[in-house]
Amino acid sequence: MYVLAYLARLVDNFKKGVLYQTPTLPLPPFLKGPEDLELWDMFLLRYLDFYGLSSYLKDDVREPLIGPGKDDWKKQRARVNYILLSTLTDLDVIVTLKLYNWNIKEEDPKVTYDLVKRVFVHGTSNDNCGKLFGDFVTLRRDQCGSMGEYLQRLQFLRDQLHEEGWKFDPDFGLTTVLDGCGMKENYPDLHAKLVEEWTLNRLTWEDLMKDLRAINFQERTKDRKRSLV
Image (tube, rainbow, N blue to C red; front, side, top):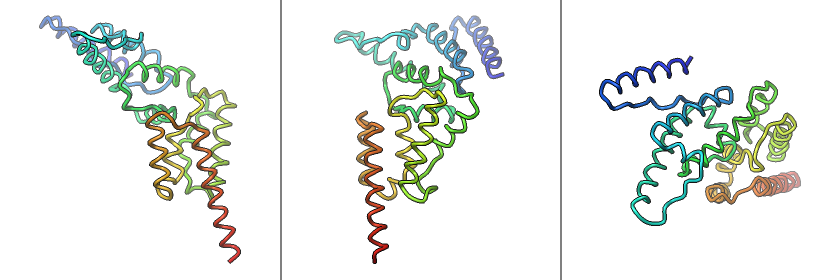
């Protein structure tokens, strides 16, 4: 239905453009999920083609070293990035991309565009896979009796998603775990350090799990000491 509305706006704006000799296009439609990825991609690229900007998503347009083209490159790339981000405001889409460690501050639109295509091209329509995905996204440390229980549940869901054919990067889920593991409230210094590592693209799934297992060991040691008192 939203595609029909978009086409209606497209025709209306085109008529206005012909009248005033300044044709403009409405922004491409929002991406809702894998079911409309193909249409979203088509509208987005055609929109950018209209303004001569699609190469910033299709190709690796490198920054000119010198000359006036350097400023034009910055402005055009920023414009493409703005247009692309304007189509990625659906909450479910944002949550899904964050699971794949999407950096919303990324300045290269091709990086974000390639990530969207890679994430949503596989689809998320399988009911069981969708339930596992939802459980993974909403899992929180305070829902579990201990850090060890949280880690077991977390790894179980991740393994099940993998068995269901969910295609994800090796570091899938970093931001979700950083938000949901309770580290920010109970271990703020470690949490700040790991967030900084993630911001610099240096944090891996293995590194995060190593730190969480160390926390689990500390908590178990404290529990044993209390039981001996």
